[in-house]
Amino acid sequence: MTESENIPKPRPKPPVEKKFQPITVVDCNTDKPRIFTQCYKCDQPLLIQTHHDGTEPVDQKIECPTCGRIAFFAHAPKIAAVMPLGDAPTASN
Image (cartoon, rainbow, N blue to C red; front, side):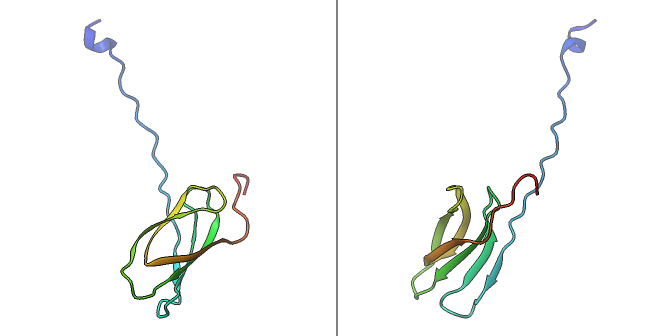
């Protein structure tokens, strides 16, 4: 047996499941648009209330009120409120 035959062959990695974050923006033509989405980590449904007061929008990191991790990145001048909607889905659902 040669030396190259003793080297283990690399195993293919399992495919990574793509995760998409649903986003619905309502009241776009007002100064208080709302974003309906879900936490990227725990899938908790969220309502994000923004406020546009004429200042320049900046990148905002939105924390999930359920798991405490970064749930969403928003490009808005101000975030007025982040509210959980219903219950987060569990692994058994």
